[in-house]
Length: 302
Length: 289
Image (cartoon, rainbow over all chains, first blue to last red):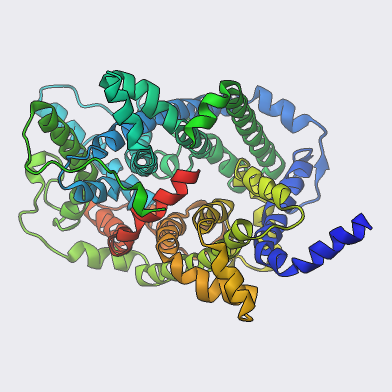
């Protein structure tokens, strides 16, 4: 009887299931199916044409020993940390400044500040390449004017990550600025008024009202930026091709090369699984941390 | 919901120039300058004859502006065709994704049905998995489907996105349920309710989401790089990424910048047209997020 009731309810809602079905169908075909197939490939050696050779855990063992992968992992971790620190703090600062009620021209500021996000990554990658160019770049010509030594920004193993990170921070900051700004606007102004009555200063307000109220949004920003910066591909591809050597190689760029330039499709899938594993660990850690913070954050989410 | 959330601190009548406020203006103006500067530099360089120096700040404005770099870049690459490809792909996928995300978002916001919680949980969960996890097989699937060098390979996989559905659901939740019940009494079907009643009300959210989707699709790089293998099927992004070394010669910077301007310009235009929806649209999403 209960079961019939359930089937009945499902049947009654058939049009609703139809409404949500495109996502799930597409996810099955272009999400889940490739991910499972990819898992199967991690246990094989395959160039995409000749028959597959089963290698057991060989790809995983090779990955653990692969110094190029280690370097890509280290680079990507650096990209991640620098992106998170600079992007989110700049976004928080800019959003708080824009949130001042007395500010004139707020709309013009917002539109201008958002422009970097509305650019094509490949195109601005080329622009930043020109600006960082050794011989004719703007940065080195400024350094020369200041009687400093021009630096081979894009051609030295020590510096090549910098232009990639500068581009990324420049382009992504406005996006988080906008999200945090929306969050600031949603905080009930009465909290601040009450705090003022109770004699709180700006510092108290920041730590006891603004940051707790923003916590869910900051968490969202942290999580999405983590996923995005671990997936960094276009910036190093366009600006440095991962070089010189592997000094600016990212995990996804290495995955792309392994799979589609030297056609080691099993190995490329193993890299993809390593990336997924790392991201799931980070996400789980963040969610665990959020749970532990407990109700304090939940209250902030109004 | 939107209007009540506007900042309620009243504006002071006259601008009072306190040192603290001046500092805030200075910081904002400085960051605005940093935001526009690379774009101005790009446009300036693209107008320079290739003999003019591109270094120093003093060379910001070209001495003898010329459009010859734009002519040169379009002889190096089939840019008209590449632009057309990008426009077709970005526009079609934006329209489809806005429709499908709004429809699914509407279903999650306004209906109770068995499995709703789990289906929504699954939807959110997919956001944590990087799409690269299945990159190699995705390529093989496209090859099997015969979608290599077709627009389908770029449009269909992203036709409905989890984040878009999540976002539209947040927005549509505030649509009054009584209006839907009244419409049902008047004999309106569920899709008609969506199409005739809900969609017109959520236009700001649609426009905001459309802007973001368009930016994302225009910027797509890895998929077109993998799935488009002939010069005429390249999207603009793939095409200009090949500029620095085309025909195995290194291209002069002004010519590369001309290509970059062509790639950036349409996005900025779309943004300036649609930006008025952006803040109101995103606001509601963030509030309940």
